[in-house]
Image (cartoon, one colour):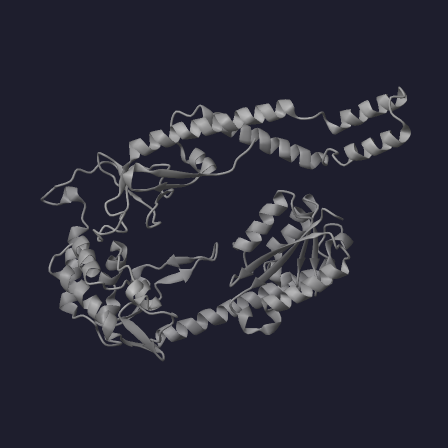
Length: 484
């Protein structure tokens, strides 16, 4: 089948990395042999890999990309090494094999399980396959529980459970020791904060003295370090009790739904005071925290009020506006004259984008006008293309037959021209309905854009990828490709 698209899906969890038989190379070898045995030399082969992801849920980038293509009707066959690679959850995996894939006409093969969905008419292969699903799921849950128990044991013993450690320390065996080179910067941060100096003043001092950020220090950036500290990084350091020698663990846990890490209430953290050497004295730590908490109070609660604040509002462009010089997201201010600011280089007066900003109203009106014009252009081009499109292949075939009957063309010419039109035949009814529905939805959205009176998040997400701002008022918009 010349147009067939076969998807290879490969998954490797963290534990699987210790097992050579589950390696990406090994899975690829097994899958490639099975595809070769299918005898589909002209098929297009796509590969999707999830490295370091659990099989207990489908929140994986590779499998999500694969499923999106399945829904678009762009995949005809999926091949995996075994069921556990696709998923270890019996209910979810069975749902895709029994319901989703048959709906979109997708064939599913599990090589080592000897499973081919074409042989089971949309089922999962009976009790034997169901039993394998349960074994895979049980194995995954048992392994997860063992890992949790081992980690909890290390926490109770006060052992380091993280691969990395906080800035200012370095790992030696199972505990932390002071890294004097980085600790010097930590002490300076606490000293300045305890003396009442602002985070802006601290970031400027660190930049002037060319002190690398924690990330740059770990990478050993050296002379290439930008030394542009973020206020959130400073706050994280100033609130971390590990700098007074307290062992802190159990601050996060894996959520039951979604499998992501979630925060744990501080009263449930494991803390062991005096577990390792302190970098700063407790009196300095407490003084710095008191100053930070005081400065963090809302202005309306302070005695002085030097800047007027307004009710917090949202802007559909938030997260889309990027500094064209340093590449960081620009922050939107919540003052009377709202604007997007580049805060990354605020401590670097010699940076090209230092103090770079653009007014929110100015940017919004410009993009609204551009968006309307772009939507109108796309719709007009679509109308012109529709008017100039050739006749439906079915009508063309009917006219060819009429010419043949009237003797205008001979039988050989008729058969040749008919074969050409057959190649342009209308796709299956299901695909046609889906495509028409999508075109109608896209056209309606473009009509909405063409007459929009204000920007909305829905319109921005549909048409704009990024907005890059440069000094001198230069703006570059990365538009998304969209066609009705």
